[in-house]
Length: 391
Image 1: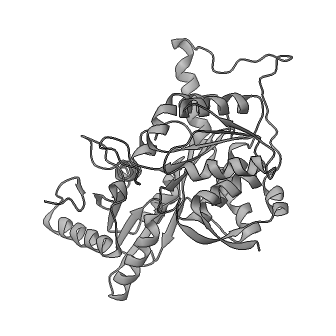
Image 2 (image 1 turned 90 degrees about the vertical axis):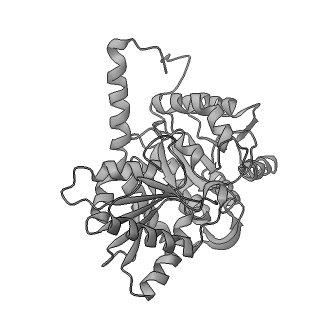
């Protein structure tokens, strides 16, 4: 067992980066991400971490530095939020296509306008299809563990892809929680030194990210799609091995009190813990309600999700982003697609809630289940509802 400490989620990410012995950190501050890079700068300045800390002039530059450092074989890290992610998005897509195993923590925050520094999933949904492996953390322990897991997975020679760890801004990043730090020997056993297969080297020239004519572009994108999907076995293996070392086992879809549940709430990120309280309260009153928590967003775990949802009579999906002018929230849209060809697919009722950190209390989850059941009894109503809109 490791050392038990109290630590905020941002510092947990920094500790994991230090334990991973990264070589290059490219950083630009933005709320609520800033605590991560401030802490890392202290580690480098104090000699606790032997790494190059590059204080760049923008988020676009941060990802560009990581692209260059990863291309020459350096273990690389960056992090951002909100508008910063939008600015760096051009290079985010490039790094995935170039198969550079960078790890990035996104401290999820609303996009402007109106200006908001608070949390929802609008920022990461803007790059939903960027080609990175993507996890969602539920608490500070998840953040710490998944930074380490991300390097293990992304750098695997069978994968070679960048990885995003998402954590909710403020409600995870700035909240002190009890968590367990693994000792360095255990981390080193789980995460070996990075040995890249192909690097930029003037003595052995290679080309990365070159122009491709229309005759080959489709094949390149096909190969990229197959690479992301093919990462699933490595992800599952890494979770198993990490669990064997730490006692903490993770799964693509986390189930809570799903036995005998007719109604399943579906969440992603930190609100899952609040939803657990709501499920407990409903179960105490004899209501057959359970919870599915999506841990792995890309590659999407279709098989695991279908198996978890196969006995449900209704799904109540809580999104934290809006697909403007579309069918509701992006998570609900994905789940409907996943179930479309199933012979007995449950109806999906979608609520969009918690935008810009508006509270979602246990009674809100209960209210959503009540409204969903009412909707089904009356016949399917609107495709989605933005929950809690004041009149």
